Amino acid sequence: MIYWMYLILAGLFEVGVTFCLGKLKDISGIELVGWSLALLSGMAVSIFFVNKSMDGIPLGIAYPVWTGIGAAGAVIVGCIFFGESVTF
Image 1 (cartoon, helix red, strand yellow):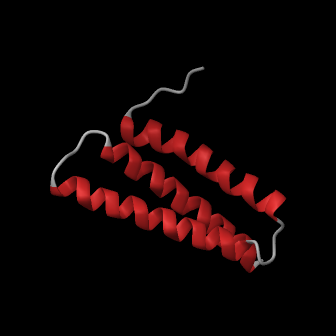
Image 2 (cartoon, one colour):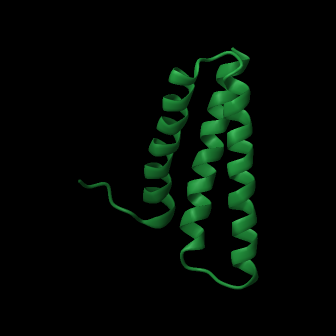
């Protein structure tokens, strides 16, 4: 059970990374440095937790679940925070 919690945490941090990416596209100066550090930190924590999850979940399951949480979360973040539309 703990490995699945690690995997969900990894996916949620990946969603945070997409939020940081969205913020980075329109800023400069010291704000750019702050969001860049948040992005790199989020990536590191996400990788850490996905690595921990693979102590009990096979890679073939952990990786697609992790990327799926990140992908679905990216769509939600884009719609809610950046006004993106959901279209094909």
